[in-house]
Length: 196
Length: 81
Image 1 (spheres, rainbow over the protein chains, first blue to last red):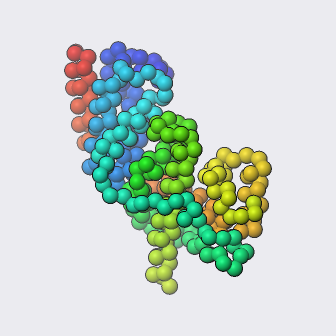
Image 2: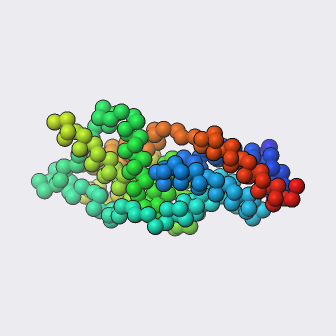
Image 3: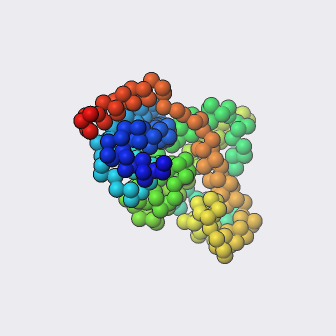
């Protein structure tokens, strides 16, 4: 049975059809919420609220997007409600993340080449570094980044879910990527300096 | 590409293999000449790889069971079974 048929059955009151629709989505929403909040309890609350709201609103779902995309929209609203006032890092304009000049020029700043981070950290430590770097980003940047690279959504779908223009979605993904790169570079540089 | 950073808005598309044609060739050419930009592109690529290879978390079974019970109760109330 395809998704459309399952949605129709769920909308007419078939709980088993709804259960089948959400089976694969539970872990996905949990992982997304965990990465965005950096906190297991928050992520568990967000999962519960998301699926309970999905029950409330299942009859309003019009199949204009995939069921998974619709759930992401609900989940991200819950993340915003949970995390609204928490302090996050401030992102710089794009140009401030970039090297100041061409490598052949005398005035350039050499960019730090971190090599293979697996030589510096155990996987568990790397996971923690990544989790805290992602959780430190403001949601307006971390949400599109994660939808793009962890959920493999297209920029077009991300723009639709987050109600952004295509260039705005692209720009936020880029800024998040640059800010994460810089955070990771700082961690890796510190580790290399410790070793020297 | 005469200057560094002038194609920065397209760099994600380039790294993700979604940039076609002459712009892609232009960036390739620049990267051969510019170490800083090579490092930037390599480390931006690795940033996503590292984020993706993190642990695959699963919703704890206890929470999933509670959720399933709550969903069934809410469902029955909604559809008045």
